[in-house]
Image (cartoon, rainbow, N blue to C red; front, side, top):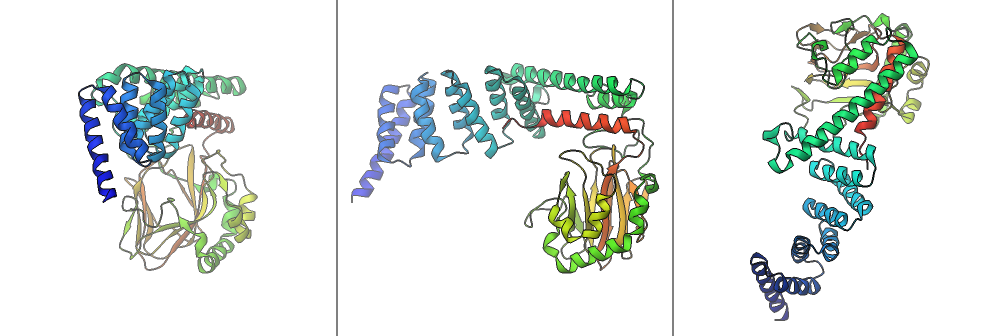
Length: 437
């Protein structure tokens, strides 16, 4: 009989407190809510209501107590984390406010308002670079959801704030990239850096006329103007191509052995889990369409254990000049397309890098297709190289597995100084886009 009475009293008190809050009777509502919280240490709602009411009443220190207790029960609750940061800022605890927001954003990394609140908090304590990076994350997160793109997609009360941070981020980004350009000009000369200068101005949106002329070419990240056009390029332009071709049978033998003995080392090329929806990327008529890979490098990271499992391939890769971009390249693997699989049309990242294929196992009816430019049917031992910023797809319509050695490489039409400049540019862009967590 005791438990039902306690539960009924709990509910009655909460209802009475809510009525009092609606009437603005704070002195009546607070004791009721505090008594419920004391009665039930796991009750979220009274702690939430206490925090909100006290904050609205300007009692920041008291609000902080209940905000912390409520967040302990619901750590992903966005509104409470934002309110906690606001209350901490109200009592000039900016460092702690930043820590609260950073911890929340590690759990919910696409919350634009939390990012913008963090940007303002970091700005208040003089962390200018970190504030700008948080502002960038806020804008990117919002715009990825179709928000903060225009006045129509921004709440009226946020217009000025969002506009100010957009201007700040754009201004800082432009200054950082102009600093990169100036440094490269001082090192290599203005004439040598003219194409690179056009690359930066196009990236900043200041020279749209310098963009790709082919409607099928859309780099997702960076376009370098004035390079020879077209998607297909002669693989012999890479000075190391002959070394790989000479050893292609050895590479095939290693790939086959690994496929037979060590299938656990092959992973989804896109990094998706087994239960993820891959229908936007992989299709086909196979029972289980898949694009798998045995990685030697991924996003610039060397897979040491895989190098040990394929010593001949590893030694060859160690002997040639690779395209090294921290956090991005090289990307090198045995690329496996299972029977009946179709890699759906997509675009690559940048035309400063090309994709090199050395076909190792190619059944009939396998091809790469560059939309608008025709198909290429792989031939075992015969390399090919293409610009993946052109819309492309690939398929294996046979009943056997297709394997190629896939690697990204520098576009051979870049000069050595231009490669150096691109590395500096990508590093600076990455620094701006690094979340301040």
